[in-house]
Length: 386
Image (tube, rainbow, N blue to C red; front, side, top):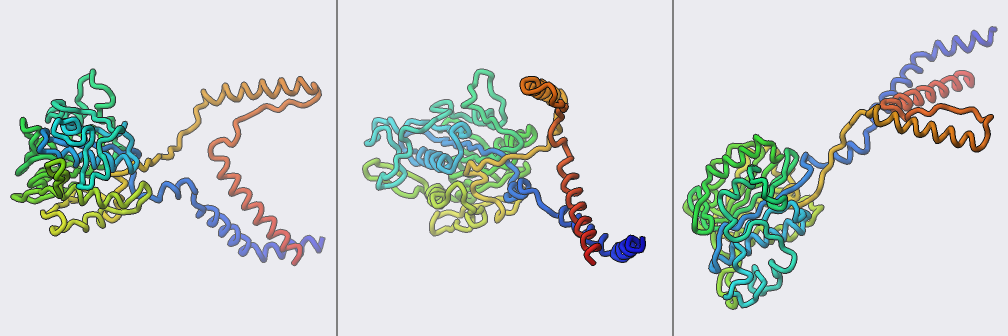
């Protein structure tokens, strides 16, 4: 009896230290991070898919460079991971097979003609006279006819990052479509607002290469839009180089600069927009390229180029409670299977009813209980040994 009282006395003396050790154990368990949450917290972007809308608003042979601009951007976004199913290409498509083309079925963007931008793996969604202001606006806003196939629809949602690229001839707050009609800065701004109201994008990046390009994003007012253009008000956007055999300019300076920079990144690149925009300079582009980021929520240094140019898919982990109506048939089938196994071997084996494994919330309690028991066991052993 005296020995038992001594043990109790020692336990009472060590009770404060026991409680402190138990508290520290609980805190250590509580501070453990979920590896799944840690993995998906590595990126500051919340989008789950990427889309690209690439528009060449020109036609005719002498606008060869505008076709090459759009095809060069098409090749780049595909290389960085955006699939054809998520790319809408609007192109007059009257250059590759033009009778004046010395290289039939091909479109090049440099004098050496090292890379055919047309090739065999190109999907033009809106071709020829389908490239209109109406079709472009309908595409963005989703107000298309029922007969329009899925390949011609922008099937975006509130988790989509959308890249819109336009090239052609323009002026102060307008862009010409095939020398037949014009789209204004107000038209594009209102279309983007409809997209936002209808939850058709998470973030949107607008890029345009034309004369006085920066005026085209001056009327934007919708959230989460980042924009850039090749030239300021009253300033032209120039071609980069001519090809003597083709006979016309083959690409514009601004688009050539962008594509050259993007050629140095891959799908997993950490290159950001801040560094990219800082490469703009008048000596290279021969115009004052502009950037508008006041509507954009994220910092440019935290925004990766692949958030818009690439197809790095993101997924969302959702905590969905179990559906009893789905679990119950599975439990019953497991019980029947267990009963059949029992009957096959021995009728004397006691049957145990099956229940769902690891009900929601039990794994966390088991972890806490196990830690508490381990700490208590260590303390009791220490008391007896002392």
